[in-house]
Amino acid sequence: MERANESSLMGFVLLGFSDHPHLEAVLFVLVLFFYLLTLVGNFTIIIVSHLDPSLHTPMYFFLTNLSLLDLCFTTCLAPQTLVNLRGPEKTITYGGCAAQLYISLALGSTECILLAVMALDRYVAVCKPLHYVVIMNPRLCQQLASISWLSGLANSLIHATFTLQLSLCGNHRLDHFICEVPALLKLACVDTTVNELVLFVVSVLFLLLPPAFILISYGFITQAVLRIKSEEARHKACSTCSSHLTVVVIFYGTIIYMYLQPSNSYTQDQGKFISLFYTMVTPTLNPIIYTLRNKDVKEALKKLVSGKLCSLQM
Image (tube, rainbow, N blue to C red; front, side):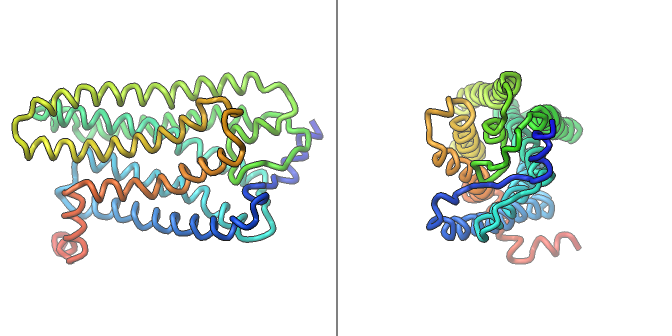
């Protein structure tokens, strides 16, 4: 037990990309660039969705939740990553590592469920348009968003707690740039069978069931779109659904690659770069995808820039 407590006293050394020192300056610039882009893009989505009355719909309510989630997720990880990339000190306290693990797990799990909820919203909008307002009422939207956030929190409390209870026997050199479950499991000096079982169950619940639900939803959506006779209505349905589907493919593609295949099927460096992509780049892409492929958001942005939205609020 004393040896296990040693890591809590010393904290951890995040090795990150220290074996590629020539890349650290480049990665620092890239992480800073994408972090700032994430802040600007997601804050813009939140502000525009709040100010423009035409965007006070279930779809943009969930999109606002997604933007808030991405802001918190990146802010939880990016500052520490920038500090470690910039200077020779690549340490993080035990409390800082635990906080990072709890928060990132909660937010990542929440996004898994939230993307499935957004697929449900698109299914109702396209397949049951006449009943959309009645079905997706404000109360139900708030309940679905709450379920997403609470399920992510519950997963984090269980999963992270199990991981942090492992005896590390003084091992404190974490071969990663963030504190995440697989990297911490590798430091353990005890049997991790139970933890790996928990990881497997969580992976099924959050990384297999939501995408399966999304695929089924889009199967029905595709059938409904093909039956739409109006070219304009069909194009509008496709544009809103394709934005969500693009985000789903990028998010789940990287996460599933990381967590649902044997760790020996890719090198440690590959794992770090994939983690870097889904923690720093993916949150940046979400507002870009929704802005570029969505006519309503582009119109709202134009009004925001021209100052019309401000006059509407007066």
